[in-house]
Length: 114
Length: 111
Image (spheres, rainbow over the protein chains, first blue to last red):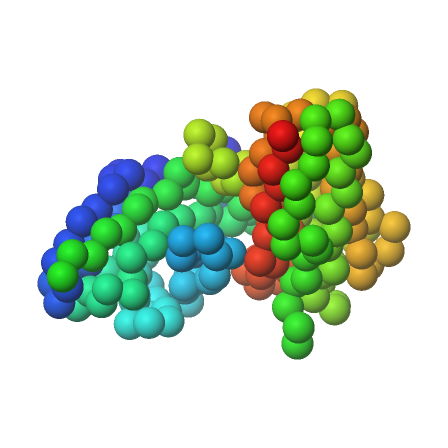
């Protein structure tokens, strides 16, 4: 069985400071992992994905995430937050083989203060 | 590519009425997903299709909800009769081997 846990429901940072959104997963096989972002009143947009290639994954808008198998983590980071980064972020673990179902975290709301 | 297209963008309806939400997946994608998002429950998978066949509908909340995919380029989610607690944003997504691509959603308000 697969599961995903986002460790913080809300994160608040100041503009220009680093962002860390934490995600732990559970999977009985090598997972596919994703981060999605949802801006207020908007749809869901893929930020980045890990699919068993390089463990450090770079995404859009300066975000990146590192897959750490020993820690079963896939934390999302960004060196310097922008006001436009304020949004809801979802960590997602993907089904393997013919199981197309994604398992979604509950989301982390990121606030960026001026 | 036009992406996943959902219609309507907004729907306001009276309790008891039938509501039909529509989705056109990305051409060539063979999996389609319907999600519901609310403040209270977050993002919930309702049902997904592979090659037009429903695979997992365990997330469909009640018999009032039904979904069809008559062909590879079209799917509907129907609620009959609608209730105020069905008010939510409904997302459609599609994929093949890569990650899911989402539509812009339909914001449903049942009054």
